[in-house]
Length: 183
Image 1 (cartoon, rainbow, N blue to C red):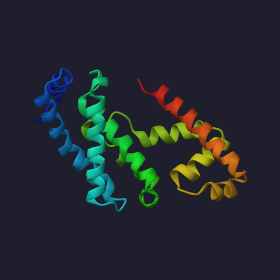
Image 2 (cartoon, helix red, strand yellow):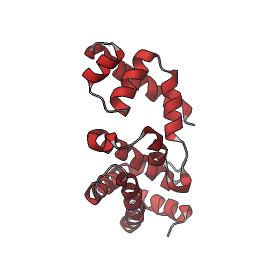
Image 3 (cartoon, rainbow, N blue to C red):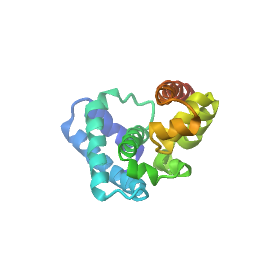
């Protein structure tokens, strides 16, 4: 089963309490998610265990949040959106992986099969460019390049506290900009 209409039917049945449909939906999605995570983690040097952990984390979110699926987007796009956030969280928590992912490769991290809705890397770069320097540089140096707060502060010529504030406020502005950009 790979047709989106079949997945949507399974999702609707799952939301209505059909345990068998829910099991079938998660089983089908786990195959796609496993491939998705393995392909993206290969570049970062992470192993199959990391991919499997991400599959399970994503399936858990799908299970607990299936009631929030409203049918306005394809099931796969919704699923890959959740998976993308899980992957980004994983890469942030694992600095070794983040250091090995080039910013130009972020396009690949956002690839959601043929259902790719947004080119995340370009959207992120555009949004970052609109931020004032005191927000943009701390985010670029700490969140993207993986520098420590102290290293970023020295490079920018700001205090550590100012870098932390810049990141916090800049991320809030980025989130607002990115949410406005989505339909």
